[in-house]
Image 1 (tube, rainbow, N blue to C red):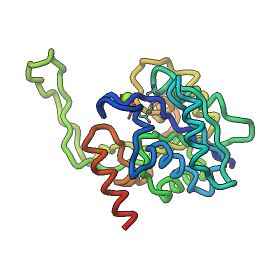
Image 2: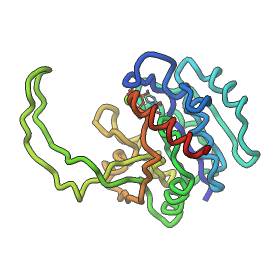
Image 3: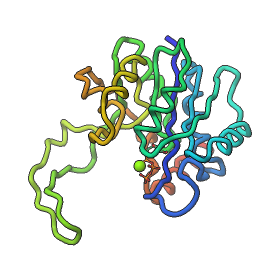
Image 4: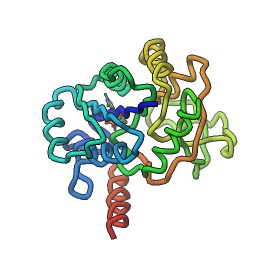
Amino acid sequence: LRTAAVIPAAGRGVRLGPGAPKALRALGGIPMLVHAVRAMAASRAVSLVVVVAPPDGATEVRHLLDEHPLSDRTDLLVVPGGETRQDSVRRGLAALPDGIDAVLVHDAARPLVPVDTVDAVIAAVRAGAPAVVPALPLADTVKQVEPQPQGTPEPVVGTPERALLRAVQTPQGFDRETLLKAHDTVVEGEGATDDAGLVERLGQPVVVVPGHEEAFKVTRPLDLVLAEAVLARRRA
Ligand code: CTP
Ligand code: MG
């Protein structure tokens, strides 16, 4: 099976605070996106990486990636993204050439995912699973609440059993046809916050493989501190 990785990198990074688009922020002196592209290209199974750039930044991102070339083994495409993550992923999928049978979707905001996690996801897809997500057990207990206007305490309506919950990461891996069908079928705004969620709505099975602590998503300023520390430890 030929495998491609689509990297949505078109988000602004509002929760990270003011500055450049999140994927272009530096980590260890190198843009987060370059780390994410390298993390996908590190897998020998990945023959193509499709980067979904900020809508007005595709040319800049292309130049940036040309400054950090990949091995000859991996091709690279850059396409402009859209208003939502789902829209951005759809645009990346539309750029896939014929002959790709398996697709990874990986957040640019998870720059430090180890190659073993990438390979574990690909292996499960190649073993026949239409959709695969890496995930970890939760450290925190989770409460369901009844949302209230700002400033009003929220009543708790339930506590799902923590041992049954998993926090989901990327890369998520898919049989190409399954993922295309999911994106074509499911309407934007129906509340799926990941790609596997779209596949679930088709009624297709999704399976979990072990995720990795270092595949965490850089979302808030404290995550940048952690990411820099992980990089420094790797380089030591
Ligand atoms: N993403 C995208 N297109 C969008 C929105 C998000 O490609 N319109 C990408 C982001 O670049 C990121 C991934 O989806 O790599 C996960 O999204 P998230 O962590 O929420 O990033 P942002 O949307 O950029 O951050 P925020 O929600 O804080 O603005
Ligand atoms: Mg977002």
